[in-house]
Image 1 (cartoon, rainbow, N blue to C red):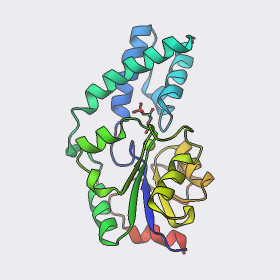
Image 2: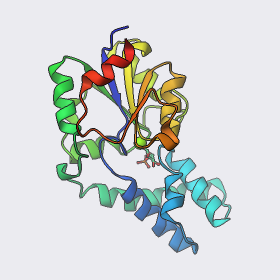
Image 3: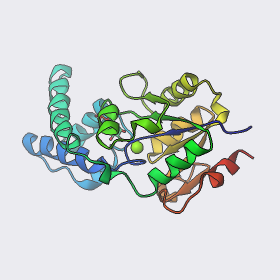
Length: 217
Ligand code: BG6
Ligand code: MG
């Protein structure tokens, strides 16, 4: 099957926003009176905002009613948005722009498949909206990764079949989501937690699209 589209997760694949999520979640944990480590933050990668808050509260050993949880998640998001509003194109991860340029030259379709409700703001701030035909973000889906909804919706909006897509993901739940959608998936990061992807690369530096397109042969 020939590959017609590439679907990119945003956070951790095109840009490193985990550091801003961490600063905002840590501020919330500080206010609530417990320590939230960078190691704990690893558990939030690829996970929705609501689920992230639940994990954070698990770490702190605290429980709240849903209305309080909504207020806490909103508070964290306000701080997070303050950080991302200051983002610039300098923060695009190495190798991303050459890869997106190559994608365009080859006539492949492109989509963003992200859990974040802030995806559009980030894409605008780092000025790469023009590289994407379709954007599916946390505002458009109801089921979080590892459910494949986000990637299946991206494929259907582009007008391609799942087996004509390659997904790029840095989170374990995201790799699972792509596989659950019967898509090929490139893990961005380490074999240790992404070993179930079809191939794993540390990042986009010194890689060519052809090496990924071969996965479909
Ligand atoms: C994912 C991030 O892309 O988006 C998660 O990896 C984050 O860490 C999730 O929790 C939701 O993001 P947001 O911006 O809607 O709070
Ligand atoms: Mg990610």
